[in-house]
Image (cartoon, helix red, strand yellow):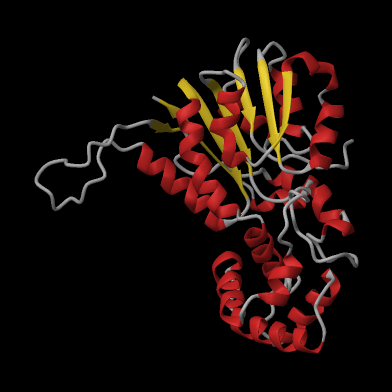
Length: 311
């Protein structure tokens, strides 16, 4: 079980959520149950933990990991963007905490048949929910060059997006690009050797961008944040762990906006927006892993935790 996924910032996350006996918590990206298990370890007498995930493999692992707390756990296969509907269907009025651990799990990265990574040959898939129709192969082999370029630039912050998109389109005319290693090799050929990043594989940002596009990750995040706040009880807390600068920016800006009582232009003589302040930001700066955690789990190095409390 330990090698399914190593969750990051465990103590910091549970502390941010401020879990207490009798509380109801939503782990909206339950994965293999790592954070959820730690919640029970720190606070075993919570009333209920609702675990949501799109990945069936993750839910099966979470079920095994949380077996000792079975009576206090509900696991649901769904997109976390449906969090409000899920809570309503469970006839729960409000919850005491919501956790979002964004990005891809170790299990997904290392499973060659899932297509998230390129350490081994595998199908170009990248779907978190394998019932979803669109795969990374569909995007790579059908999108116009301009759209591919936009995805790579906006979601991967890839400065060689134009060259990569052009090379992909040229290569797929010869034959479809179907596997992870085929795509990684195409991307490597598209980037001049001298400006290549030294610490990461040249295809890393391309794979990241395609994964975000396949799973519509940014749109789902923008959708879930206001709904998560709506279902929180007064003094309930939300904790979000991001691994991508654009994800972190979405969370930071949302928390900042919801912590203001007015978002009008300073040019206006008086407030006209009618906004009600909903959140108190708990993290002026994001909480990051310690040097020791990064040493033990190098994948944690880009993690950023932000938290807020509902007023």
